[in-house]
Image (tube, rainbow, N blue to C red; front, side, top):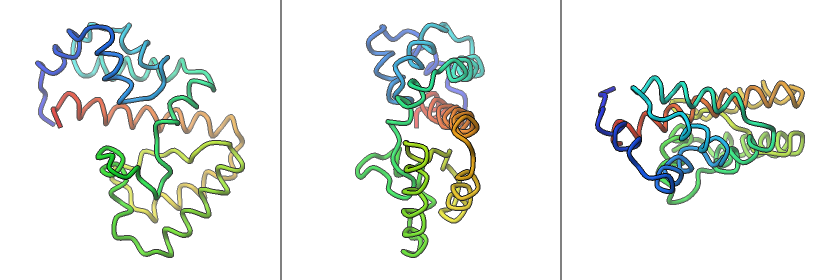
Length: 167
């Protein structure tokens, strides 16, 4: 990854409203966006990632729901949303039977937990995501909430990295 220090400077120099809008594109939790913004200035990309980790660790169950609301169901990226389509590239061209299994497993997960199955899909195949979904379905709500928190942190790190890399 190429480091673009000017991108970090530009992000830190954004006014409060602009910075909030940018951060809410990364993660749809207003509390997360406020916590990351409050951590500026960030000395380098690692300090921005550390701000992400600290903000994720502080989110309540309601904040996690806000953060998950910005994510498409696995197997059905948001049409026309380049980020969603890029992150779920592993489902492109997959056999319809696998997509059907994903849809069924998602429905069972959502019925149990009351929210979409959230996983850092970048670099994962549809079969790998389906296996993870099935592996996590037996979890209790508290265990699953902590896994979701970790997956959101990974997704945010990737999105922040892309922002800093100008891609």
